[in-house]
Length: 591
Image 1 (cartoon, one colour):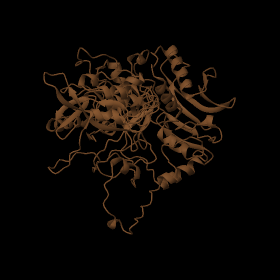
Image 2 (cartoon, one colour; image 1 turned 60 degrees about the horizontal axis):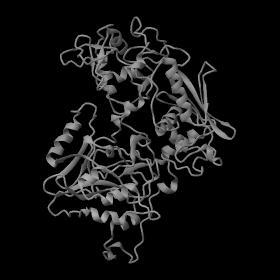
Image 3 (cartoon, one colour; image 1 turned 45 degrees about the vertical axis):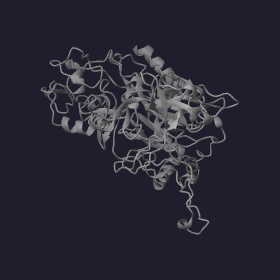
């Protein structure tokens, strides 16, 4: 089997994070006021204050996000800092570094410390607070959205002023993650059972009440989500009662209407602004459409799957920390058809016992050669902690035979004598030109695992072709140099991610810059697809030759709209990469 060579990041979703939100459009900054007379004026004594600009609540700087215990920063002040970048959509990195540098830097406009928005000219030492930068006429480069310039060194392609970024949920990256041990889950269950009321905040979301699950009513839960009756949260969003850019806390509640769940978004002061619909996506879409009419902002163009995910995130149902608490509620795991993602049942968490040998000792058992399919079905653990499928570098390493294209069509599954279009076209693809003309039944969409993923558009049977992994072919030496360059952030916007797939012992496919939609596939510890190297005739040159291709096949029957996942097969390394597949047998790490 083919094995991915190296992947520094967890997913390829960082490239489309801003394009899907649509909230960073410069039109969102229309009508915003410039800046108060002096930074830090008007803050209440007991209110949290931004450590950068010194304001408490400010319509331009955005909401306050926690950076450290007792330390707060405005969203826009942190986003536009020179050191801060987004490796994942909505996750801000290097915020502590920006705070340390800004504490010693004076603003060129007001002369107060906390200036974090600097000029990208190497010889310019000018820095501003975010509201002072807007008032001074600082600009930015639209192509990357992060390069800021002072009025003296602005390039011709720079535009201004700096736009507002208030719609997206942003958070500061932290190295430590929540443990999922049994003791921690017991504490979460105790907190969740305490009258269903918690005092938890996740970014701009405040959880007021977790509600009560309804196990006997299937309309109050789905496959991976629970809609507890009485679930209440508060979400900070744009104030639609005022035409000026301001925010307020909307109340999101789940009630019952005619035996069905009713999702309500209500304004804190205007009783006329109430959005009541049968799904969180419909209520969220109505709120977004109302904002586009009131504030004159371009509405978001999202697919139905993306709208469902955004609506669940707005209510807080899809936030991992909240979803984990909901799964701990009494009666949550008794819901018919519900499959928890973050707290699997106890029976699935236990390691199965070792099999007993019929000869009394495992060393006395005779050697029996088993196939890969038999080992996959009868393995003791879900997968061994080794790099399965990795090609050895020594001379004595066994080479895996490459399966020709004639044998692929034999094992493809057919239903009622009718084979799928993709499977039939693959069996007839005897050349590179025919393989390039195949139409893949997949699309890119928002993924609950990690931002962006690959989804099927129709049903795909077992062992049928899903998509081909395409990329730039290169040798091992050049691949090592490219990987080092990506890790150092040589390409702006990459964030250190590299998407390389090993084709054979001497060839690697790099899809970081030149690739197709196959690079959006997420990792899963229990995947539904597998990779295979095939050979087809290359008829594009004067002499026909054989050419290898990496093809992703369905490991089981895939339903329409199901996410395509496969095992990255990383080797065991000291620096671990967290896994967020949410499967009951998830190992927690990808390497």
